[in-house]
Length: 635
Image (cartoon, rainbow, N blue to C red; front, side, top):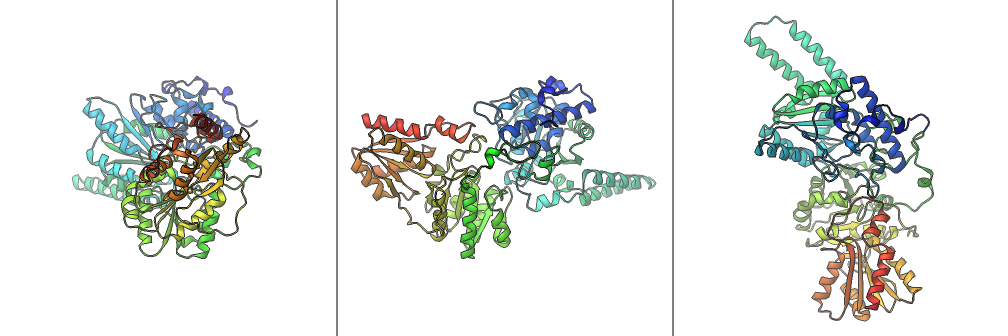
């Protein structure tokens, strides 16, 4: 780290405790401050991981916004939050930035509970425009006077909610500013007609030069009264429509400004000061470079979008991350998809701007005509899959559990109601770690289970995952397969995926004192607990339920009647989850005299920490299982 100054050596940054502190700085000082902010971000993320590339690209934008506007009186609404690290640093959280994404530390995303400068809590994309519209309407209802600024980018403009917000706020004609941070990348490269339209600009400098030259040409024409003035305006509007994407937004009711060079603070500040004086809906188009200021991030912004700890000097992951390890569940999913698709031409893969994140990069390369990245548009992804399924195609929709929540209506009406064979591959099921409460996949058992016609599975390990995927594509029904973030358990992998019998669990360990019914990632700690308890003289039966829906009623009821004590374990909220399904089964079957206890996630959102820390905090790790069994055995 010799070439990168530590934050403690910074000249300007150490004096910045609130946005007010930057307002007296001149442009050279602000540029120096931006460099120091990048140093702090790189140093912090290199040590503990985080979303680096997007925030590096938005440093000047954050500085300019806080220089021009008067937060927290003026409301800044950041979309997703991947861009907001500089915002956090400038708003009194510099000294705590080293705790980013750590247990008890700063969230990786804006949180209202964390700072008065965070006007809206975010984590999923596309929310900023609608939230800012609501704040602007409330301002008018309350008779107040402040500016409202939504910062959207990093691919979020392809989200359906963003279009809905644009359509509404442009029509309402309220005083509101939207900053479109256009870096031509989301997590995966942007897709879609709007993205292509926005990216058909050469560079901010080129467009500005063309506009300036055209104005010089217009000024050379003698002024011939009002008709010529109207002609000049028409030509200017035509120029804007052909050269820049402003006509789209102006048709929606916005005054379009841009595109602006997003790393020129003098340009940004001057234009934002002009925009601040307007009293109408304005969209400011800012062109930035994802990963700006750090060579390795600029060269590979996809890898540095969300990255584990790394060497600053080389950009390589730290040695402990490079040690041989079992394949991740994501990689097993991707590899299995290639196997299955090679054997069945009907199988296609769909993702929502997460090609790399869902492990489908190699599938996309091998089967380009059978791979569809729809952008950040989960609702479209699901209904698009439903349409494919009506024509004999077997679509596998790979979406993180937390993001599938955005497409609930489509799952219900467009897939399950029609009994269409769409497979939902839910990556990041359960605890995801440092991304926190907006990203944990802890609700899918509960929100999918009430829907008729769906089959729900969760594998105990990476080998079972490949068999469940084979089961899913073969069964001809709506199916969800939920698997966790991170590496597998290192179990041997069968050479060929084989379909499982729908609704059949398995007994992994036979005991005489109590039964643990576990599902998915909770099976491994259940086995660990059974092994530890056996040393204490407590004999445990461990059942891998495999299916949340349909349950293996015969196996579960027979085991419960035999042992009379049952503990259910799941990495999902308790309400409506796997344990609830077991209790409903027992009630429907009229089982009496069976003690049932549930371990899962309680009625609260789970904050950020490592996956292991979170499982311990929520009482679903091996030791918590042991403690629960001890209480049940002595009662």
